[in-house]
Length: 309
Ligand code: AMP
Ligand code: FES
Ligand code: ZN
Figure 1 (spheres, rainbow, N blue to C red):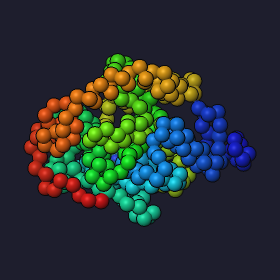
Figure 2 (figure 1 turned 60 degrees about the vertical axis):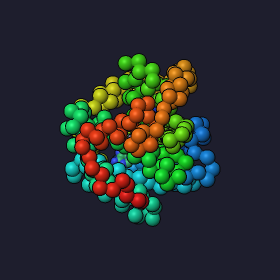
Figure 3 (figure 1 turned 120 degrees about the vertical axis):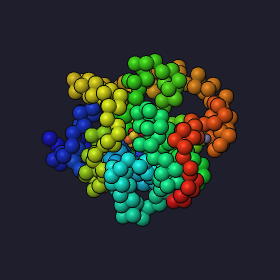
Figure 4 (figure 1 turned 90 degrees about the vertical axis):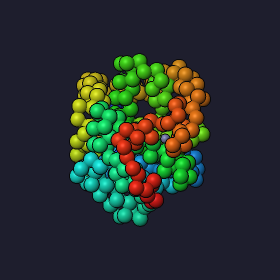
């Protein structure tokens, strides 16, 4: 196999693009995919400051590295979720990445700063931990971005993640979620802009990017995510992709181009009915936002609101 770009021996193939690349041309390919996604969806403007949510895994560390390589001003945010040694280890990878490159990493520890962790929240709500975990992460990404004046929050959701979420939303016709499923959610009062610059890269590509680019990341997956519905959707989509490469991309990009606009209006109307949470000020439909309700349920006593980065 020869590299599509330079004709030297290839080390990675990307079946979706019917192409193979040598190391340098593959890194270039990844940068190009992110550059195109950022431009196409106007995710980040010139000179804007981005807060990258980093979990210590391959996607978010690749994302941070790629945004910096493309010349963006990007700091990191790590959230300690209190999931035993998994959290300690993932924190170590995020910290090391930042230290080795002299980057700024904000850190928030759920237990220390807000008085509860994900296992406690899961026990209190008697639901799958991923719900409380996702809610806490979204709340804190937004709060830290607003507090420090970042123009956008970037997460490492990739093509596989987004296609799996889309399949789940379509299977249950979640029209509200479909209206909000987009690689850019614009800023609104109380909300920072949210962007997903990796939507043009699959998880095999982000893993290869880290390996070839010398980025150390935590390989193990979250131990609490077992049985997560999205893992099943990913398996189904992988089987389809195997038979016809490019299925995932056409499913997701076709939706963004032709499906999303039909659902977007309804979700814009939902945003209009929001008012500030009585407890934390975040926009919410009720009096108290879902994050503060969760905190009340867990009976959390924050020792300190937030730790500065
Ligand atoms: P997940 O919700 O685990 O699928 O992760 C989706 C994205 O959220 C990742 O690509 C990261 O950008 C971000 N993320 C996940 N876990 C953390 C964490 N502990 N701290 C900061 N960001 C995170
Ligand atoms: Fe959230 Fe595992 S990372 S439950
Ligand atoms: Zn609140």
